[in-house]
Length: 322
Ligand code: MN
Ligand code: MN
Picture 1: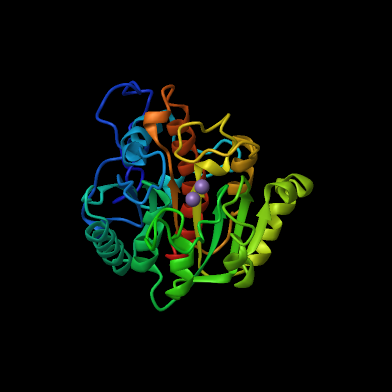
Picture 2: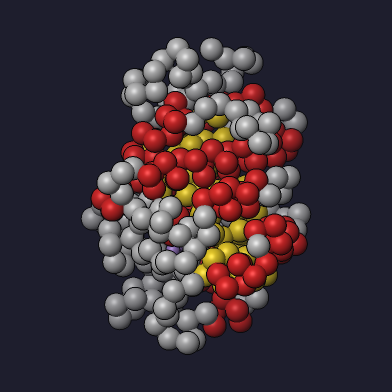
């Protein structure tokens, strides 16, 4: 039942039990005509950039399934995204699981077309390499800032004797290609053992604000998100949420877990703290269902998507004068 002409509503759990009906993101209809949308929820079921434990290709399907637990309004923010914007499940990008370069091109073309149509993307990955072609699609000629939740900087140069495209390299490539403004980038939750003590040189030398987990716990989430707001300012800002930024107690189903992270509650507070920022897109990546027998990591992914969707819908509605 649409509240406003042309707006889409999730199936209500009061009418259709949550275990019923085919799973889509947030129980929304699937819509492929982008002229009908302000915000598209998209899956990129692909993990060919994964350097270690694969499985994030199964992320979108399980996140769709667990997103049936999301209701339509946010209890703390008082936002119902579906009343603010035209939002639907725009399906999956068609990927090629055995050809990295082919898929990178497919993802870029998909997002470039979407961007041209004036639609703001909220994506479920997939491994973190997918953010590079997404940025190629939406940030050419206009570098974006980024709030990056992750245990890893993902600014390494190359792996395995020269492979420049892995889930450990997207943000070095994005800076090199002028898609990402490192001075308007903040990385939150960096930790874990390193390959080398110079691992963070690229990020730091280019002016990224790196909040190691030690500083995170010293400051607390309120000061951290205040710092994120200062770093990204008023400019166009992308949000990239790698679930391994969370402690693996909360998100064990991921390829590269690192102990000692922040909690789901803290992450939710930080995402809510992005309210009003000039957000131009977001993703939740690295949910790897093969390591997630309880489904909890997929639930975390779906919930973080809903948190982001609420603040995103508010800013997109304002931008579009809805
Ligand atoms: Mn990452
Ligand atoms: Mn990571």
